Image 1 (cartoon, one colour):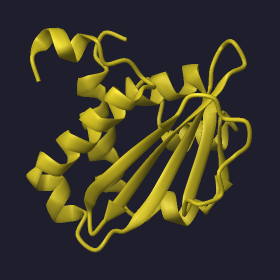
Image 2 (image 1 turned 45 degrees about the vertical axis):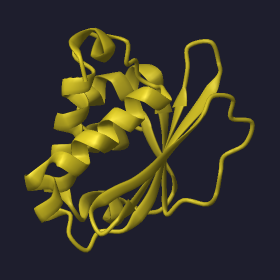
Image 3 (image 1 turned 60 degrees about the vertical axis):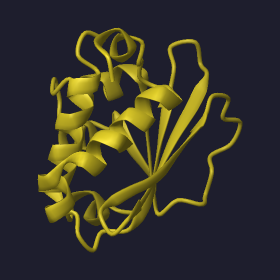
Image 4 (image 1 turned 120 degrees about the vertical axis):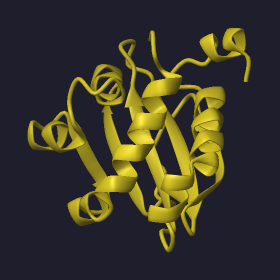
Length: 141
């Protein structure tokens, strides 16, 4: 993806999520540590203007098989294995490595809507690598 196109990718958006999916699938390290991991993960973003958005990632055997974006979320979807919710500022801090998901959970800035802490903490290296890839898309936001 050209530099100008990359600058247009803003979190949260479908383009941003598709780029994360593309980078995750190209990452050899993530493919290796993600083997056997299959889950549908939805993150809910509460914007500053009280609008709720959702990004859903479909993971099969460590590969991102698809992503969906809902810009106007009226109710929380229940069709994911893991659903996490936070305000936009918390998500941006996580993506920028200004905080960790663990700290956000313990300070109640990140909420588990569906699933468990075990699901989040079961693959720390994979989650770290995904955040690393997300941070590279999101530099400058």
